[in-house]
Length: 224
Image (cartoon, rainbow, N blue to C red; front, side, top):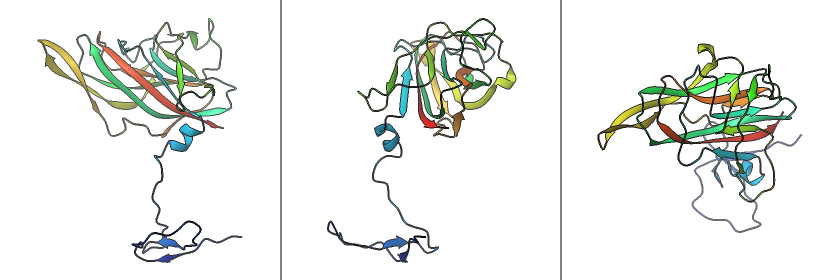
């Protein structure tokens, strides 16, 4: 069995040449000292397994958490062979009078892969999905809605709300209230939420509002 070893020392102040052999540098508790070469998502993006989908620039209203018509929805259908790792959700106020509220995610399990009467979704809006490696031909296995008509058979309940992103605060703009988003500590999931096949999540609010928001959802697809 190969064993990695190193030297406990202060990082060197010299540069090595290509082809030189060097020992790993360890900290005081024999931990290996490392430094990133690229951003943490570079490899996932480069390998074509990271995706983004957005609403129209004019924005859409974020529905109440008990609404049967989610707008920004990510669905991992049964049989996809992938887990969807939710990386980030961002949204920005575009127009309309906003309401002070919390913004978060609702979830439904057992969503299968079929859009039909009696299924979890009786209608599902489509979205243009962009691979993180722009120009890549690798298609997403997910079903994504960022507009159009999406309808749940059963109205969500309080229990459907499972992740709080942050809250909407109000400011005055030309005598009309508009919104600023105040992120919570977990507003960027950073891969801490995995959608197993047959699971869907969507953006929701605790207070109904006519304000329109431009939103983007980002995720990575990883073999189960």
